[in-house]
Length: 176
Image (cartoon, rainbow, N blue to C red):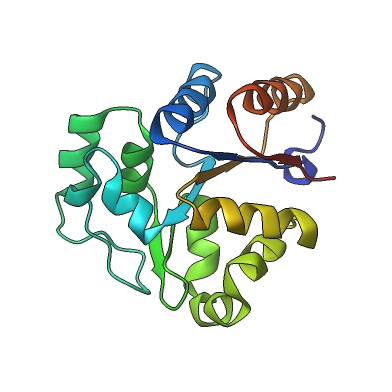
């Protein structure tokens, strides 16, 4: 893509940790890191992930509890969804029970109160997802799904992620 900043974002929901892990593994194989990937899930889902009970997040704050949390978890879980949450900026949005990791977390830190006021669907609309799709994503998250998003670096990557995620995800959206 000539202008990476104007590239579409591919966003998908995954019904379980294994499906999300496979999608994240595909991202890693193509050279993407936790700095490129957004991960969103409910606080309840985070608690039920394998190893999720070891990840402590302060509400309304991007910092993980404990200075060594990222290193300890990162070494234990490797290139996994929890690894993203341990290594990336992570924020819990009070009021809607959403946990966000990756580049989007930094953008939401200042607007956590606004995101809570707009609800979960409002958070997705703020990410550029149309309202009808945002409501699907909201329902998925409320039922335990994990949302992942990436801004592909090439048109080939965009097509690849969109197609692969449609095979393993529930809902996949490619922004314009």
